[in-house]
Image (cartoon, rainbow, N blue to C red; front, side, top):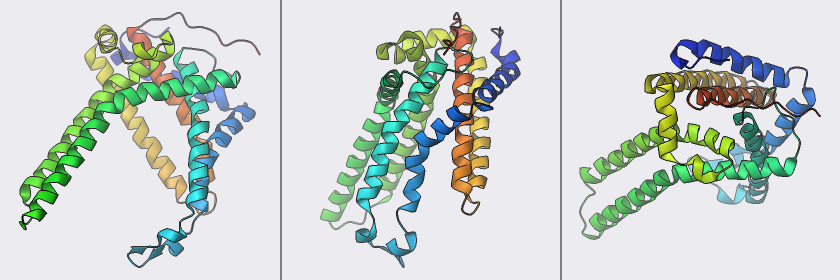
Length: 275
């Protein structure tokens, strides 16, 4: 059992998450293949158009873009992503060992619900972004109508909006991550955005412990981005290597935040059903 002192046991959390992801995939090639197939449509978008035919100098040939094929792959990618999100929800519930891909309808519904939870969290960002963009546009049009050159005020306003968006993003991630796990544990979208309950969870584990956990997670994400970035530039097979690595990271990070959440909300860990 992992100790409450997350600051002391962050190494245990990392090693447990790594072992969990390893057990979930190594030797479970069918499960690994399902992950890859579910993520395949988005990866194929890069192959349906030729950038050289679309870009002519500095101009874009919009007619050369295969909008229909891109839209089809995007829609397929979004729909299939709900199954992956639903799988993460099962991990958030504390199932050990890693769950199977079964009850596909349940996976899909859980994935949609998790997407709704995150949409509710990022809604303030979208509102501020849209309102800021509209206000900046009004300022620009107003200055153009009066034949005055757009001044530094517009630039400062845009910078202010971007800074505000950054702060809101940090807040959303700070609460949304635990909110996602709380949703999985309770089955309630409302509980997934219940700030007071999430604050109690953070207080229980300790603010500094949770901040440390987020910093470590950010470092892990950066390392993952560097690895996948390096793999993606490998000719011909780079995109496939990224697809192969991605499931391990998905399971690892889901398990990591599950264990972090457990520091503030101790749960009886359910066992995966025997298939």
